[in-house]
Length: 269
Ligand code: HPA
Image 1 (cartoon, protein in one colour):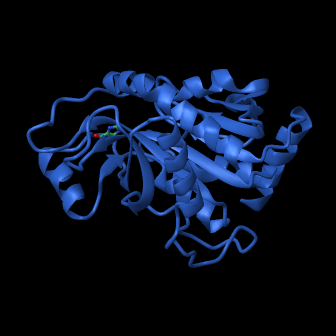
Image 2 (cartoon, protein in one colour):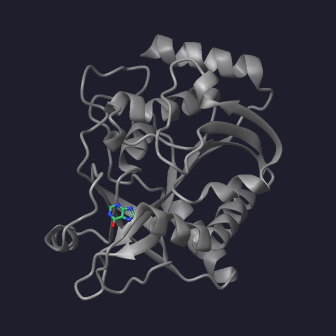
């Protein structure tokens, strides 16, 4: 694993002249953030040794290096999901690579289904905790160079980032929710009872990504900020049929607000 990471990092460093300070994982329908990245240097996933290939529509699969909010960043356009058939080491491999490229912070975005009855479609939710129901990516021999055997998860989502995001949102009159993200394998959306179950166990939203990347980032002690667009509601009486296309469309609509928050946060770091 370490050798693979180093090989991939050496390849990327031979192609790219930017040393990124912040890594950004762009979720479903949120790829538009890349339009604001200046002085871009691109690498297609398919050209990067050891990188998995993304298979879902709407994820084009490339690393975008550049500047955003005055910071050097690397954005992942396209991420890997467990439901695609990758194992958890593959799903999280890019995060390990980004860490070895030198990022100091990881920003993550995703789309999710709201289970908190106070949420509406199109809301943004700052993630302040998670419940991971996807196999843990750290199962297997621990690699001490990456982190400890039993990593702490008590502050998986950095409180300074949560405070900063709320401050930015307030200043720009953007309403934000805050809550717990439940990570599930997918690829099915939930049954009504499954949504109800996720609410009962403490979730505010449910989605098919993010928790693996956050676990691996925290293993490496990388501070994390994560934000979710509520693209549908798993709330009794408000449940309707969701399609992947609808999730992407709602994601697009909320993109402006999300982009603004991310950029202003970067400026404030
Ligand atoms: N459930 C799981 N994943 C999702 C959902 C959902 O309702 N919406 C967007 N991603």
